[in-house]
Amino acid sequence: MKNEFLVSGSPHIHKKESISRIMWAVVISLIPTGVAGVIIFGLDALWVTLVSIVAALLTEFTFQVLTKKKITIFDGSAVITGILLAFNLPSNVPLWLPAIGAIFSIAIGKQVFGGIGQNIFNPALVGRVFLMASWPKYMTTFVKPFNYDAVTSATPLAALREGKVLEHISYLDLFLGKRGGCIGEVCILALLIGAAFLFVRGYISWHIPVTYIFTTAVFVYIFGGNKLFNGDWLFHILNGGLVLGAFFMATDYVATPLTVKGQLIFGLGCGLLTAVIRIWGGYPEGVSYAILMMNGATPFIDRYTKSRIYGTK
Amino acid sequence: MKNAIGEFTKGIIKENPTFVLVLGLCPTLAVSVSVANGIGMGIAATFVLLGSSLIVSLIRDFIPDKVRIPCYIVIIATFVTIAELCMKAYSPLLDRALGIYVPLIVVNCIVLGRAEAFACKNNLANSFFDGLGMGVGFTLALILISAIREFLGAGQILGHTLIKGFEPVFVFSMPSGALLVIGLLLGFFNIIKNKKS
Image 1 (tube, chains in turn orange, purple):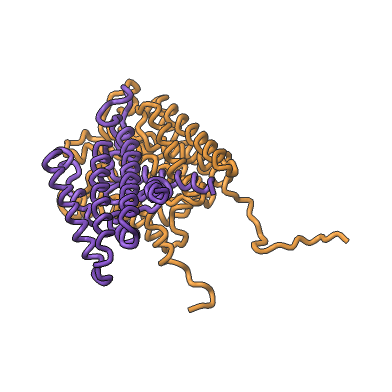
Image 2: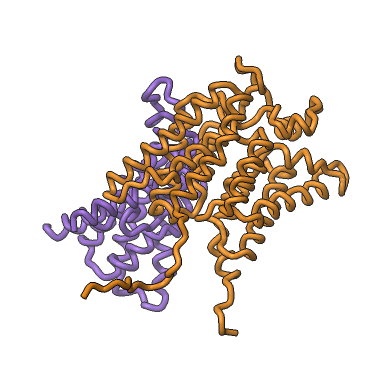
């Protein structure tokens, strides 16, 4: 007699979702930002992004062939790492820079820990920080927006740090991305469109991004001005990589806490660190360091916010 | 004699102080910025290792068990002082580059570890070759790490530029680069070891 019932352990109800489905959705959500980056900074931005993606995929493939692991280059996670790394670079970098950054991201940031699901730190940020520490001169010269023949300019945050009088940029220009900066961080509008898509599909929750941005804003408002409670919080939200980081990198599934309480703590910590680095630190921008530091703290946050097992005290 | 050769070679590969025993990482991380520093540190540590292993082995029957560590430290510190004063006299540049890490050889765990684990239980000849092997192993490890770091971090080996137009990866001149290089080399040697067994 043929057994018609499948006997298996729980869970018994399956959703259609899978890792690669979610990853490709994140890739789609990043497309508006990429388009905006190319419009603002010209075709250079496209080449940097493509080189970064290809290098990430090739590294993942080579590493998995060498270690005889399952090839996972089609699950989209390496593509995301490549895109996010490129979005964290200026558009006028030499093309070997994103290539080396992507190789480092995938090899050291992800595969040495055991591949997808095992990395302690966000791989794209690992790559960015590596490039920042190695070739700061390329990482801190930015081109002017809509000015494709490479006239360099400082980011508004860097100008603020050096105490220069800011040429006035309206909040609307900042929102639309008309300023110097990294490829994927300037156009807040495009980032919010992508983030909204992920919210609607339920792939990211509000907890980390909202607490992150809110904490930064409050802290900057209190301490960021020339006297207390006088900081330009909107300027700080719209500048630097805060929105990109909060929605797309602090919400990485692997390196962030699992529980809601943990995620709130994570967002709070990221916000505090970002504001502290921006106001008193040595760099004009602190989003990547803040997220990496909180990535490192995630195992401890998880340990202390473990939810109560049902039926125990 | 065969025994002595065994004691000598085990320190270089099978029980390499840096990559297998993972001892003495503090000076390794700190001074391996350039090959010259690595060699200087390696020679100083080898000298101290040799001297302390010899003396500890010679007087191992007279040292009371309860105060053996202070006795070892006094012996080691004597040799470190000799090494430091010699370095100050004959190579002040190297002395400035190595800085506090020369006096810190006193608390280097390779030196104390060999006195505690080997020299206090073995005869003079074996202790001599053990100290020499460990010292050479430590020096070779330092040279390997510092060669990688100097090449990547400054584009040079022993101060000579190798490839023109090479843009140095600055992070390898920093402590984080040292941790990266040591971690990857450790992993690499473990792969080789696992393949063999």
